[in-house]
Length: 242
Length: 387
Image: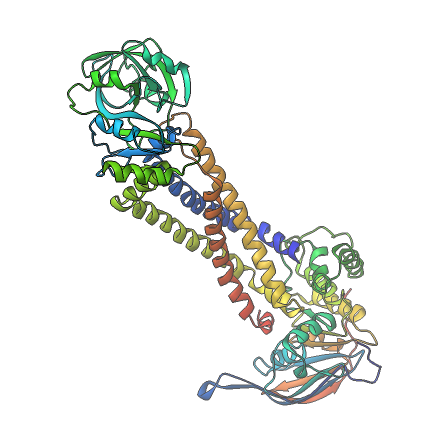
């Protein structure tokens, strides 16, 4: 899907989401408005339970909002059938998870190739493209290793390669550094920033980890289901990973 | 993605082996028990199977199975021979006699007295000797299983294997001397008793205490006439029961099924095997899916359709089922083959039985896949963000 440099990748208006009903109902989102522009790295920060994960789930098209609209690359996800939405997700969104979620019995190469295989790319071609991305995250010599043989930082770099291998327009990351020490987290963020951020791609990262805030272009503070404020790039530079 | 599904299955060796062993065990029970039942049931009409030449069996109307025999008057044979449409008719004696072995032990055996002139009703396959030798004085032919088994000469200590009867050996039947002139192959009877073949006239000598000896009249319909029609004609004319070979087999089988608990008992064991197989396999496969649920969730978030995930789960279940069924049927076939040496209870695992048990195993793995797939298909992809 083509996006111009000025067309927002994500446009959310008046998003609400409530879990449960009656006395046990919890309002996770209470009218969220959010734009994410191409080439931007947006961090969603805020206390636990403020609705960050719910918001990226709606943005990523894996959770339906109750009210409001959310458009990716100009396409309102609510207007798509469930099957179309699954296809849309597979083509345009990359995921990075806190717990890496690499399949333990697959090699790093096969793990990276999964989004391509889901999209119907032939296995040989998928593995060839996966090898290129593995090389880009600095693990070109670990083609045949399984995730269990890698450190946490290496696993997250494999997960980043997996999120980017199908060249998605949006990458959503859930706490990508919270399971890593500071130095490793910095290396992962450097890899993410250098490889993922492109003119036609946006990154949305949910994090508690204030040490990685300097990597953001913009930080949206959430609390109680709404975005309280949005700040531009912090004044401090991104720390070196060396 | 299907290759990845298989890698996931093979990657968890413990559960993979557990699923295969579970299905293999269920397969063994589901194949072996019906195999035993079918073999036993086939023994209820083994006499009819082995005597294939006549196509009509005439007997007392009260006879219910081929194991059962009620004597007829010898004159009935001549009446049957005189009925229109009958090509030929011969007598057959079937009785149970006591055989004294060389070491003094007594054994019950089935004796078949064949028509002296034609020897119709004799064994189809001779292992040693000739069928015509039955015309020699005191001659009997012994079935191979009996010769090796119950009628073998036990000269040593109890429990030691006996020496099989051979041509030339002698026996004492109802205190009368009999000489073995041949060893033949025969399908074991339902009670697995040894079978002794002799002529009808010599059978009168061995079973001298019985006043009437004619158990069955074996008849053949004239060429071009339906055996069923000729059988009805015989029954009407003689007030005896007359059946074609197939009808008599069905009658024998029906009697066994309706008057014994065999079907219920074996059926119950098969049902238990099926239920336990489903429970064990389903549980292990479900646990395997639960262990991989987060990865299925990740695939789902990344754009895998429900159809793709269902295909992956079905492939895993079907492959595990195929492996387990292959192992189970292999073990059962090996067990069945091991029974072929003894001759008394040759288990046969036929294609229809394999197909039926394969279908049962398919149901097991589909049930296992159903519960696992339900869990995966109901999984919200947003769950992947929950660490």
